[in-house]
Image (cartoon, rainbow, N blue to C red; front, side, top):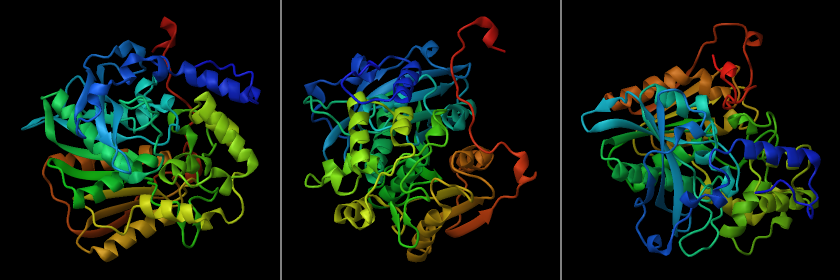
Length: 446
């Protein structure tokens, strides 16, 4: 992809953001990487089938922790409407994996928002997008990490050559991607355990919650439970209105890009037009937002580019949440108030200005009220916002995962608690203020 688009009204900062994104690519654009393509022979293979495997990906292309290896796979998944769709994923290998009786312990990681176009795939980013926020540290703790890119990120066209649209925030679709990524990885590598835990953050938090709901109606063997951190549970809240205090949004700083810029309803429209062909983005977006979304699609820009296009803009028309298609979309993708299979740990920071904690609380309470025997643990974090919810609670969810592999049962019913903070709030680093990048000279490494 070139950062030069002379026929598009792109600001200098947007061009700079596109260049920054390219710098973070480990393998070039996915559109030019043969690994992210599939042929017609894979068109009808069932979900969970391994389509392609790169067992020994060149680790030097990535900013990985020492002693960590990486593989990449392409596998078959299933979209929201049930269509077969190829999806890419990466696998992180610790040098000394934790083992159960049936093999190396597997944790499936579901990432937070990285973009909506194919180059938003974490598997081709040098730091795998959320790096030490979760996937790197899971590997460093000995888990084999299987991390889906989600459909539409990475593999850009299906076996028939048709474009794959990323089903942004469509939690049931992402749940399919998670489950089938694990099954494909297990078939590619017989040394992996049949048992596994799933964990996700933000967009991925909603995805793993949907995985728990999927387990109740379409159970898979080996599933041990899910951890949902700062999850997307709904688009519209009855009391609070649109998803966040800033309308629908996610913090872009998850991968170290453009801190404190938010993704907004433009990204919902990107998916709604495919689910509802009769829906037009102009029904709910302002003219400015329609132009911005078009530029994002044409340039293939991801998180940093999106941030530059929507920063300071008013994305929606008045009463956009009353739109019938928005209402239908919400009913299709929301989680909470449904039966779950297996234990679920939910974590949310009390100061999350991206996804308000009350939305998560409502989803937790609705589930517990309808299903009193559901195994739900809900942990609130004082003075903590969106990304810090992952880091500040890390030892807690690491311990929770270890208990699942150890066969320790979680008691039925809802268990709610809040952590205690050790120092004054002002003493803490509040937000992510750095990003992981490779060194280019010997003296840049410790």
